Each structure stands twice: as C-alpha cells, then as structure tokens.
Amino acid sequence: MNWPNDKLTRFEAARLIGARSLQVSLGAPVLAKTTETTSFEIAKAEFRNGLMPMTIKRKMPNGQHTVVNLGKAIENWVQEKGEEI
Image (cartoon, rainbow, N blue to C red; front, top):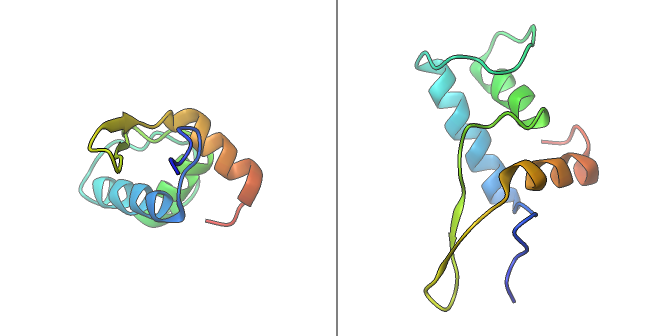
C-alpha cells in the first residue's frame, strides 16, 4: 500500500518540525508571525501555518521516489490533529 501524497506520517511531521527547529536555532529567518521565543515553538507555529520551506521525497517499495505535496499534507494534518503536534 502506498501512503497518499497529501498525508504525513507522524514521523515525517516530527522530522519536519525538528529539522526546522534546528534551522531556526542556527539563525534561519523565521517565516511565521509569532510571539514564541524557542526555536521548537517557532517551528511548530510555522508548521501549523503551512510555512515549512522543505520538501519530502519518499522512497517507495518499488524503488521509485515520490514527492509529497507538503502544503496540502500539512493542511490535512492540522485539520485532522488540530493543535496536537
């Protein structure tokens, strides 16, 4: 079974937030308007607002790669899970 291109796994969501948190802590520009001060909270705010400047490329069981529609996948995640990140 292939995972849909407009859905994130919990592992992908965690990886996105963790990687973005590291980028922010190392001085990357903040993309979301937020009052948060920690890089982790800033990354979560960017995630909730769909402002993640990243791409997810999945390797499928048949050896091919597919690119995730990240904007739609985050939108679906937020609708399904709400503020739970």
